[in-house]
Image (cartoon, rainbow, N blue to C red; front, side, top):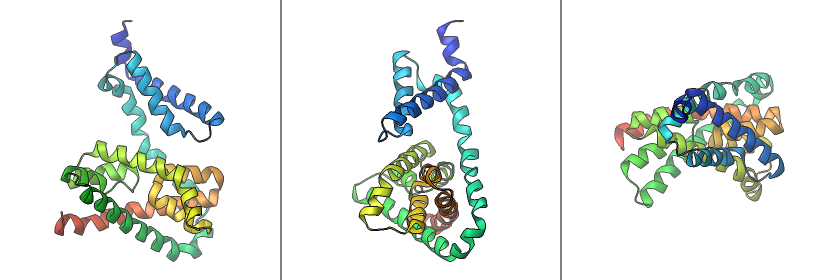
Length: 230
C-alpha cells in the first residue's frame, strides 16, 4: 500500500487522533498543567507536518472522531440524571445562574469583537462560543458566521475555562461549590463539566445542567439579537 493510499484511508485520521490523545493523557499524568486537549492537537499537527499530510486528507478520518462530539456531550446528561433529586431544590438558582451566564457570555463576546474592531463574520462566530461546540457551530451558521471558527473558539474557551476557571473563581472569593459549578458549566461547557465530573459527580451534574440550560437560553437570546441588532 502506497503512503498516499494509507494517508487517505479514513482509519489513518481516526488512528492518529486516538493515539495522539492517548499520548496526551500519558503526558498529562506527569505534567499536570498541560491539558490533553492542548497537547493532543499539537501531536497531530507534528505528525501531519512530518508526513507532509494536508488537513483535508487527515480529516477524512478525523471527522469521524468529530462526529462523536455530539453524543459525548449528550452523555453528560448521565450525571445530571443521577443527581436530579438532589438538584431539584436548587432549580431556581441553577436556572437564574445559567440565564445570567448566557446573557453575560453574549454581551462580553460582542463587546470584545466590537471594541477590537473585528469583522461581522468574526462577530457571528464569536457570539455563540460560550455554549457547547455542536450548538455553537449551528448558531454561527444560522447567524452567517463560520461554524468551523465557532467550534474552534468554543473549544479554546472550554480549555481556558477548565484550566483557569477554578483558580479565577477562588481569586474572586467564590467558594460556594454550587455557584462555581454553575459558572464553569455556563462558560466552559462540556470540557469544564467533564473536568468537574472527575472531581465530584454532584459538581459535574450541576455543571452539566448549567451547560444544557445555556444551550437553550443562548439561542433564545440570539433570536431578538439577530432580528433587531445584527
